[in-house]
Structure formats: structure tokens, C-alpha cells
Length: 378
Ligand SMILES: [Zn+2]
Image 1: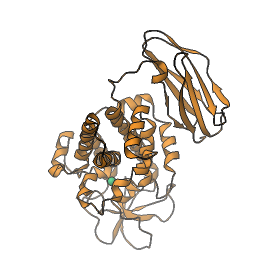
Image 2: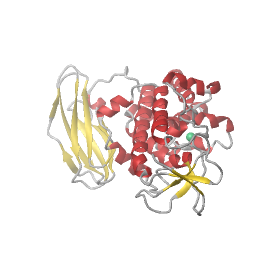
Image 3: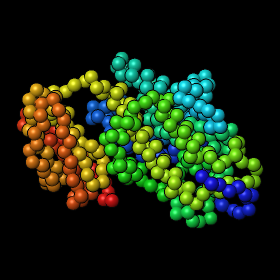
């Protein structure tokens, strides 16, 4: 990034100087992606514990309580220095008294696992879950995992131009700009954004992203700050009455980076919750019980994953109905060999946006029906 420093000689409105992690659109988008990737059993448990109908409604809760509960402030970030050599192993040096986002994510996971094992369900568990959903998001905001002697970018005053590189520019601090990169200009709907982002998540990416540890995920976010956000700046806060103009391409260069971080956060959060509430060791008997449709919120195409854990071949048929019960799509009978799985693509390109029900018949059990939503045509 090339930047120009100049004295402030103009008037511009100030982006809210809030240091709360992704803005609510970012946190909600991550929650939608996560929810869409939960196993049905895990989703049912998570929503029942929270007492809500979707995860996005509580995703920004932890930011809202910071004022009344200042002891939770340090749980949202970890200030890893970008000017010295760091490794995954040195992150703990920046988690003073275990008071940082890395430790907090690990703590919430452990406490939720114990509660699930013991069958505990109380306000403390509900709170653990709300914190976890939020902090996995914060962990993927690069300026929540880095510091340049500038309070994680809060001390650097910058000028951000419009997404197309035009306009007078909007003045704000670097941290807040990253928190609000999505909503300051585009004010996107988080559900639609989740849908768009999910359409680019491949199976390979998903498998790669869930690997690693909470520390290695924080380190990846740190490296983005160190290698892509901070170069071009002088260490420390910008001097009083000066502002650093970001490149006119800043938004278009950084937005895809932030998009991918949100995708990773959503997939990893889903994986954490699946491991707590529906661990792999739980097996199911028939094809219909292990059928899954992914994603359930999509743009043009969704996929049914049919898993046959029985010792004999299963013949499956899939029908998609609209709210009126009319069949809009139907597959031929597909054979799933014993102890294997099959992916069947469902093409909705010529089907209107709306709510549909996918019914999967295996000829043995009652058909399994999954609700899906075609959200947008790209
Ligand atoms: Zn936060």
C-alpha cells in the first residue's frame, strides 16, 4: 500500500471511532455462514440453548455489553507487535494474564464442551455460546490480532476513498475502517452477503480452513495486518492534525481479503460448534438420516450430500417442492453404494427466488425434508 501523509486541510465526516470488532454486518454475515454449515443436530441444539431463531441475532451481542462489563474488553483482541519477528508460539507473550481473544475463544470452547458433557444448560452456558460466536469473528479481523504501537490501528488517522477510488475521501481511524469496511459504503444485507460469499467456498477450501488451531488462525490474521495493512505506515499514532491518505484502490484491494476472512470465520465457527454438539463419533443408521443439503441459503445451485452408512446399496430420489407443494425439481433415482457418499447437484438457475423443501426418499424410512432458500440470482 502506498500512502501519502498530509496536513489536515479539509472537512470530512468522521467514521465512528468504535473499537468493537467487525461491525454488526460482519458479525452477522459470519453467523449466517456458520449456521448454514452446521449439522442439523448441532443447529437444533445451538438454537435451543440460545433461545433464538437464528445465530445472527446474537452475533454482535458481546460488543453491546462492553460498556456495562468493562472486564470483557480485553477478550476481543490480542495486540501482537507487527514490527518484530513473531511466530505462532510467541502469541502467548501478548496474551497477558490470559486476557485476550485467543484465550477467550479456547476458554469458551472448553466450557461449552464440559457443559454439553454434563448436560448443563443455564445462563452461563448461554453466555459462553454468545461470546464464542462473537469472538471467532473478532479473531479474523486483522487489526484485532496486531499492534503497531497504535492501539491496533486506532491511533492512525487515515483517509479512505470511495470503493471506485473516487470522492473526497472519508476520514477515520485505521482500526474503525477495518471494522466497518463492509457497511460504511455498501450497507449490505448480511444474509445476502453470506449467500454470495458461500457460493465461492469450495469443499477443498473448507477442508483446509478447519485445520490448525486458534493460535494459527490468529497468526494468519496477524500476518495480513503485518504484510498487507501496516506496510507504508510509520510506527505509532499519526501526529496530531495529520492524516494518511490510503491508496485510491484501497477498498477494492482490501475488500476481497476481508470477504475471505469472513468466509473462514464462518466455516471455522461451524466446525467448532459441530464438534461440540455433534461430534464425528455419533453415527446414524440410514441414508435419509445422513442426507444433508449444502448450502441451504444459496444463489443458483445447491448440493445434496447423501451418505449411506449401511452395508447395502441405497436407491435415492430427491424432489424439491415449493410452499404450495408443487414439485419444481426432481432427480432420477441415484444409487449410493454401501458405506459411501454421493454429491448430487441441484440446479436452481431457472427457479424463482423463494423458500423450498427438499425431500429425500430412500424407500426405507420416512423421507427427510430440508428447508432451503434461494436468495438471489447473480
Ligand atoms: Zn468484538
